Every structure is written in C-alpha cells, then in structure tokens.
Image 1 (cartoon, rainbow, N blue to C red):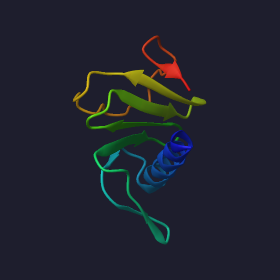
Image 2: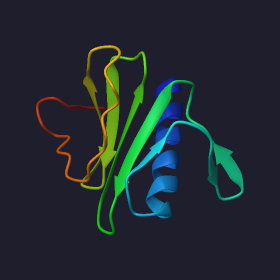
Image 3: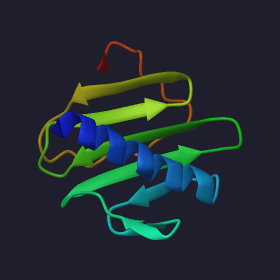
Image 4: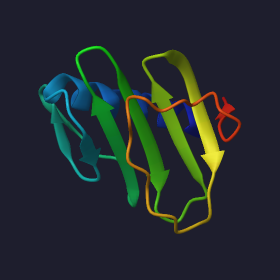
Length: 105
C-alpha cells in the first residue's frame, strides 16, 4: 500500500510542476494544487523538469538509499540505489531511465 501511495503522491507533484512553468522545479514543502495543498513526506524532495514536449521527475528521501523516477518517454516508475546521504539529483528531460543503473518497478 505504501508503494502505491508514494506513486500517487509522486504523480500529483509531477502534475503540479509540469502544469506550472515548463521549467525545472523542486518540491520539498507545501505546494498549492487547485484548491488544496500537496506536501511531500518529511525529508523527501521531488525534482521536476518539463518543457513543452517532455518531462522527467525524481524523488528521494534525504536518508534513503533509492531515487525514484519517471519521464514522459516511458510510463514506468524506475529506481536506482545510491549511497545514503547522497544529494538529491536534479531532473533532466533527457534522462535515460532504461540504462543499466535504473530498475523498472
């Protein structure tokens, strides 16, 4: 259940950023979505990069060992393992998530 809840929150955050400015955004606190507020879990950062034709988004807990990601080229959720304490990666619309470093969920 937690995995599904994470995916839903991730997609909501992605939608909010993609609809806003077609640019790179970082969400680490409350964000207004329509008539409500979305806030990622404590110590979770979501980075989103979008342009008119594509987007990518990554999420990471500051003390976690995984980065979760998605992009407009592939509907899957991906993750990769990193060293705990690694600074969250910026998102890029050209990210290739199907590389050997990433695992499909």
